[in-house]
Length: 143
Image 1 (tube, rainbow, N blue to C red):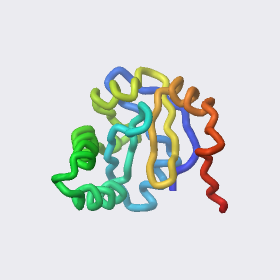
Image 2 (cartoon, rainbow, N blue to C red; image 1 turned 180 degrees about the vertical axis):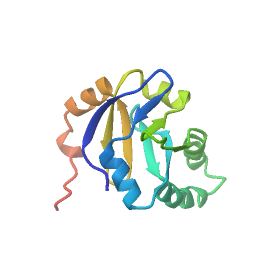
Image 3 (cartoon, rainbow, N blue to C red; image 1 turned 45 degrees about the vertical axis):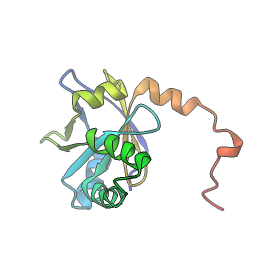
């Protein structure tokens, strides 16, 4: 499980360090790769451990090729995906299309989202966190 947020930077080549806490969790689970995709609800990069990607991929491939709504999502899901390795320094190379989508330039924030991780531009993350959740959209996780 991934949780917490960690501020880092991204260099001009698109490399950013994955937080040690997240690297340790991946190593403990025997995960060696991440799959990076566009997050569909806000400008962020979603990082999925390879095993989570494989589970999701099964669901995606089970959709009907004649379901236009599903196929639009499949297009976004697969066309934005990039499998990446961590280098010896624990850095991830974020491909240019994903950096552009999430507007990652210098200051970034890695955010644990349970089974997945998100990578935000720091200002976009701070803006997201300042937004109020309307009462009718609050999910009661304890109920």
